[in-house]
Length: 289
Image (cartoon, rainbow, N blue to C red):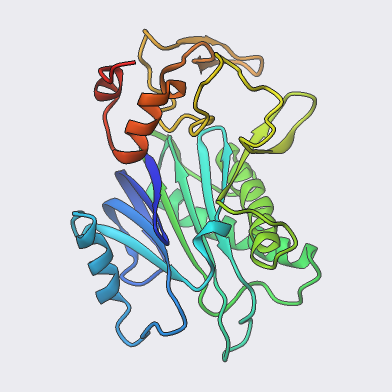
């Protein structure tokens, strides 16, 4: 999966098996998922047409799931929890009809889900969203226009995605955290000029860490003058033996360790990937230093 922002739209690209509750939703194979911010002049009578225009404008096919929101895309919260990544935008000014506000959540798993697990992911997200709103003191469980996309790639690993499972536990915790963080940004309680990135860390006890390039205490983690656009690598795990290796995990099993890789920290490579977000690893390795 690759994700990137263009204007007021978040795009995810990959070879997905996915389920969506949004416009033209369902359960099928797709290559594109997006969440697009619309303004107050948006005509809601035929929302599929502008979605198709968004996909066509990027040169993408019609095998997509699209979401629409009135929430600014810069308030997006991205949460990485091992093989699970969530993208959340949230506004709650319309628990009742008559005003604008939507909570959109996209869930991506780098490990394969059965179709049943994809559908169960939507239930797990709904539970986490309701609990997050309740924790904030709201007497409702969502808005009338909320939508969820659950997508996966990779070999089949998960039959279920309820909160008693490893996958479901990660999805629930990321959604519970993400809804609260996204609302804080939309409501102005937290000011950010760009989407926020959170990583679930186990160092010093399990907790969420918001990464920011401004004032990063670890800079430079590799070399002076490095680019930090991709502190969390969108290629992970690339499985390229030139860039990393499998190591034993403290929780059992193995994890891909690429802590010594500097590829996306090289200024020319980082800039190339920002301009060409679907560039292959081989293409990036050929970019002159």
